[in-house]
Image (tube, rainbow, N blue to C red; front, side):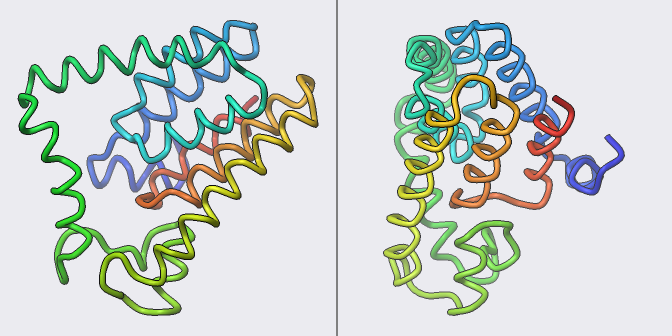
Length: 193
């Protein structure tokens, strides 16, 4: 935990340590051949869906097909618990809440300080209305990076789990719409493998 992302996570009261733990368990499950268990674990990481979903897609493209049923099980449970806590109306209004945060100025989300492609583009081009030119560039770039990473990992094969996992984590962070400096803690998982 002696890293800058861990320090920032604890300082800001975020949940990146829990996310890194879940990704570490997912890595262990993949290493021991339990893809369905890895899917269940990755589904528990949906509290950071912007990182978990691209990572899942990369794993699926890389040929880890049995990860999807496990993910579906825990994602369904996650969805049911969320709906029980805030109701279906609250759950369905969440995307609108995120959109409102993107459109607010001076409060909410500051993409120019995020460790993402969106942050870099916002830093260069400035804040634009949503959806703006940044979003039209970001969506195909993110999709292309996710697909290409999955294909690279599939071609590399099973012997490159740590390398593929690390590349997938980097791509999930960089192409994410929301990722802060403490989310870089995910990169500790393949480093320690």
